[in-house]
Image 1 (cartoon, rainbow, N blue to C red):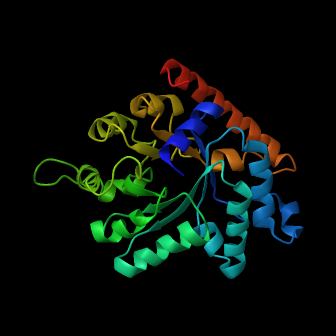
Image 2: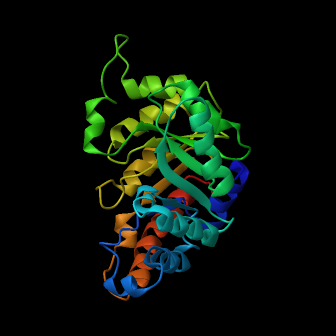
Length: 273
């Protein structure tokens, strides 16, 4: 998906919401387990109730890979069902060198037809560049993540006084421009979002951690939004597991609608819509 189309979707839906499809058979309503493909049936219901409220869906591939070939089939069916009018993020956190990364990229971009894939930067440029060779496809690079363990390495100070995550952003911004490269910046670090925005003023951020992880939507939006919007805020568990009953999809709609209305106000205040 070209950046212009993504921005157009944000404006038309008055939303920069990404919904994470971290679909866990141990958490979905039990009546769905009787279906032939409970993973897909759950996802289909969530998508049917939320597709007008969000611009992106982010299936975490681990929740499908763990079921082998059948899980991959559920993931492919989900991506096919979402269609072309949403930004589809394969949250796979891949990263290897040479032909290995090329094969990962082909799997997600050509076979599965995802719009973007999350990539770990630890092995450097030659582990990321193969993902950048696909037209209108995106790398979403892990920069400052929302988990507790992010403190172990990402905030480590280097000899020049910068943190490791700052070095990752500074160096990787040389590899691709804002039309192909995004950064994962966790909502649990609102105090650092403004600083990162100044480092890369035009790049999109994927911001996880709003909802179940406690990130504040208004705070992170105000710190990171730019003149084009420039952010996708993801919520997974806070939306898709809003109810364990037969009303699970309707409950997901309510949670997604609440977030979309806040986003609409923020987009209006920033004169983006």
